[in-house]
Length: 156
Image (cartoon, rainbow, N blue to C red; front, side):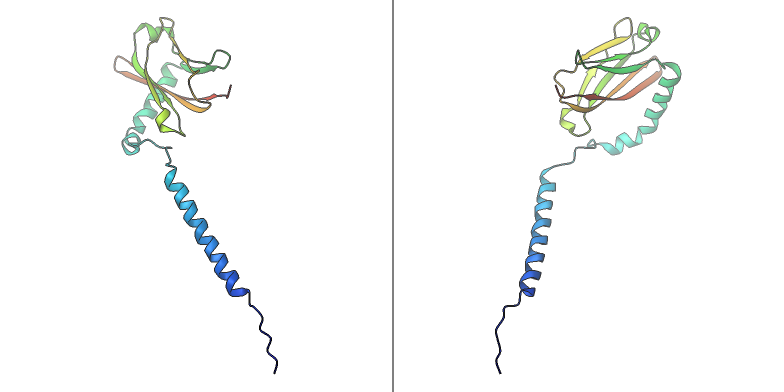
């Protein structure tokens, strides 16, 4: 009886497949753990609790200050926000938040400082290209207002 010894590839193939799959999973886990997701703020729970108040402020803004807006001038690389001049005459207090959804460490908060005509211009030349959310909150007396608009800064 002549037995030829032939090498069987099945056990080697199965072991190789599972080794590559385990190595791929380990690589993916390592990659994910080194790239934190900054898509939410660290105190998101408190912000979620206050979200209804924010919705109320947005509705009040739409009803009483429908001309309030945020715009971006690409040629001048400036973000301009404006509110009705009658509201600016009441000297509102507030803040402007430049929020970068993809990188929390790039967020900026500025003081609201409107001109008598009701506008404020911000230099956007130092902002990285991409999506930014401009969140403006202000109050006049007991009434609180809020605008949340997206601005896309193109690459120069």
